[in-house]
Amino acid sequence: MRNVLAALWTCLVVSPALAVELVIATVNNGHMITMQRLAAQFERAHPGVTLKWVTLEEGALRQQVSRDIATRGGRFDVMTIGLMEAPIWGRRGWLHPITPDPAWDVDDLLPGIRQGLSVEGRLYAAPFYGESSMTMARADLLKAAGLSLPARPTWDQIRLLASRLHNPAKGVSGICLRGKPGWGENMSLITTMANTMGGQWFDMGWRPQLTSAPWRSAVSLYIELMRQWGPPGAVANGYNENLALFSAGKCALWIDATVAGAFVEQPRLSSVAGQVVFAQAPVARTPKGSHWLWSWALAVPVGSRQPVVAQAFVKWATSREYIRLVAAQNGWGAVPSGTRSSTYANADFMKANPYARVEREAIATANPGDATLPRSPYTGIQFAAIPEFQAIGTAVGQEISTLLVEGGEVDAALARAQQAAERKMRAAHYLR
Image 1: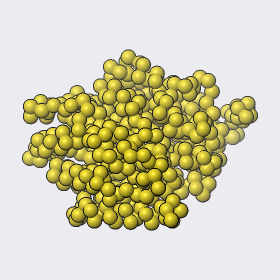
Image 2: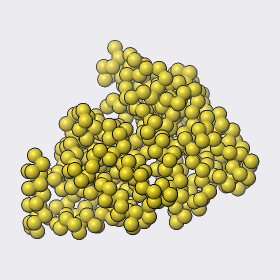
Image 3: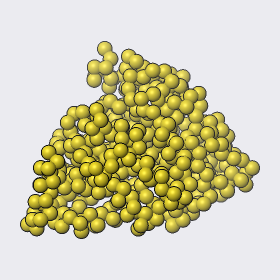
Image 4: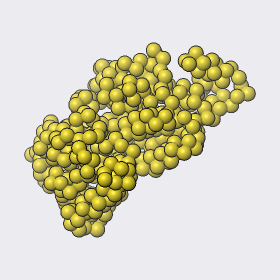
């Protein structure tokens, strides 16, 4: 099969009459924008190939690629997906397996990231960057207040720090958290809060657990943090919005993706570069599930009209050579991390990225197979890896978003969320 693919690619590159347009769906994150700027080098190395980019906000990307792949619409040749979608879609036969050559070095991938993108040992998406979650804080504000951020903070300590550092008179909110509703938005954080407080999405009988004490504690703390010490209009803020706020010096604390470390420490992008301290994500009752695991990865849907060229692009964009290209163009502080052991073995990368040790430890200790204190029937940390979760997680996220905006009782909101989740699980025949 590999010889056939190689022969097909040879035909493509030596036949100038065969113009190829490759349509790539991706998310509007910083590393992806860099990839688009550098992609001209791929086009020059592959005459006749033109890359067309569809760059979307995170929620819109998930909606559009999910719709396209389920219908085999063929709109996209390369899709940016994650640890949630890759194994589900791979098992359903919706993705071409990734077929790397030895030089690409699949064994260099971080084990948890590789496993999360594979089905029965076969890779279905190639990781572009990987991440866990961590705590970021303004070192200058902590020092001025006579405070410190522990290397492994608790949520109680975070609450105290947020209250002490909140200074709206100077335009500084005590804490910034994701408020935008969605299973991959506010629910990514809130699920880790519920996990570390001893909760889970479903018990071993697949019954939702949203009215349990851990969920009540997690959501109550989240609402308090956001209402008391969060920024104005927090319900509209996802990763990119909070990155902008923190980089502009408007947040004292921020708990989010480790990938943010690559941007808050770049002076040309951040006014607080050099003034940030990094720590592990907060814990409460248990460390299980306290920090998430994710990768934005590139995959080739079976509906692609150009699967051979798509595979070539995926391998280029996720290779060690691409990482070195970014370093040569923008410096080691700008490379996509969280995917390869060789990146963390590079002394220049470690020196340029103060967050790197925190990130690597967080990724290494995130365990999607054992992320909850009680036994759970699903894999996943900030999500449950079942097809129905996207709809359930987004519905619950909307309930909590409404609670944040309109007020009301946490118990009532969680009761509505429980009912919605039970309806979905019954419709999918998990419950009788």
